[in-house]
Image (cartoon, rainbow, N blue to C red):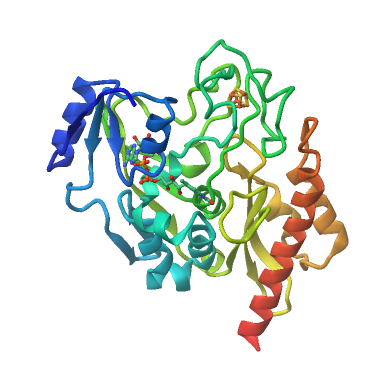
Length: 335
Ligand SMILES: Cc1cc2nc3c(=O)[nH]c(=O)nc-3n(C[C@H](O)[C@H](O)[C@H](O)COP(=O)(O)OP(=O)(O)OC[C@H]3O[C@@H](n4cnc5c(N)ncnc54)[C@H](O)[C@@H]3O)c2cc1C
Ligand code: SF4
């Protein structure tokens, strides 16, 4: 690991001032992504700005139909928070099904949004990778790509975004709050991550020196009937090959009034399926025509590579399962 300096600011203003003065510096939260990448020589920031001693960034509050999660709230604290479990169960699931208990105790929500791809070539600096070393090529396109993306890829990069929490956040119309040199701003979670195009090294809309301060989402009928279904190679702890963040508001007769859907594991960013509300409104989740149209819309434009064509049928069946489970849960809560 290359030498670096380490600073522990006590206020947000001080942290932002340091980030502006040292543009190559990185914020350190739980360190479960950043330190790994530093040890393997993938990133080498000259300075770490440890934000853990800044007060007020780890709070979790539910009020007036909205849930607000501080960027430094730990994954385990958010997953087990009563308001999250009862009013946004899919969000709690997306956190609980991620990583391991020890990691969830360390890892912050802000850091979770900013985790990097698990593409093998990105994490091994002996291979070409346009994301790690722009212009060097992509080892995965004609190489090992079983875990990588089938949607939104480019000729420069086919990496996928590996996280879980952001998928549910997008499905539930979440917002990410930022603070930086240009002041505070709010960004819809759906536009926070970027597709690779010809600049795969730029993964989010975060500007240099900007910090994530909080995350919010509306609480209501959709969040209360949300579900995160994660399909993975093993159930102990593993990244998703495909994941489905689904939410549905059911009428008493079992038809869907409103719905949301986002997919994980398939693209460089959480993949919202914006057609879900329109295609499912007034339909039952066991309506094969409506569900067929939704599954078609979800994987429209998919471009599988040599090793990952299995993700397309896997995503289709996971979507059906997620809405079927929501329907069963809703019927149970009415009974
Ligand atoms: C073995 C293993 C298995 C895992 N499995 C899963 C999984 O199944 N699902 C899943 O979703 N995740 C998984 N993860 C990823 C894990 O959830 C992330 O490493 C973690 O959430 C990152 O949070 P952190 O606080 O440790 O971030 P850090 O490592 O501290 O930071 C990560 C990045 O975010 C930046 N950063 C951190 N906080 C802020 C902020 N407030 N503002 C601006 N920038 C910031 C840092 O500079 C750094 O670039 C796994 C990780 C490991 C090691
Ligand atoms: S898919 Fe992206 S991250 Fe993986 S080697 Fe290619 S450029 Fe790098």
